[in-house]
Length: 264
Image (cartoon, one colour):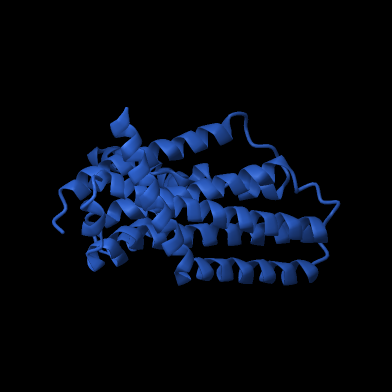
């Protein structure tokens, strides 16, 4: 029991340091500026439209929210661990009774705290602007909150993927591979439709198996449903969040194995 408590304290200490490091970086400010520009652009377009301006503003707001969280998650996840090896500061932390796996978990939770803070601030601003400019809009409701929550979880997922790749790759390659997986993951349905049109054979079965093994980011993109004010299917939100957390746990576990074998 004492060992578990000590391990949690070590993870918390690393997470705390990582949290304040990222707050001092320009990555967070860049993500906020990006979301602000997109939200302002959505505001201008919605003011120039006479057909459902609240829907236009909502679409731009969700886009800003997704891009900000994704940008911050990928870059922070890729940099958080690699920077420690480049500066050799990891050895200072490992001089204490803390393993590399604990160090990795601490780094992830530090990044996750920043992502949650970023998501909370942007969500409050976005919903506030939407309520101010369209107080009678029926789009501000449970579905919108769930959509924002799923995008926040998506950012956590992307950070875990990027951090996992950084255990055996460079910062740039980790970011590129994370973005590549995301681009594939948001188009899983379209890829499967293309595979259905292929002739039966070992190649088709191989590609179908490969696609099923990749993360499916369609679980988190429900902007179209929120834009039309519809309700999510029963249990969809819980299943999507559980899906992401299962992947995150697996990535941290595998990342811990890789980092233990990494030559510093």
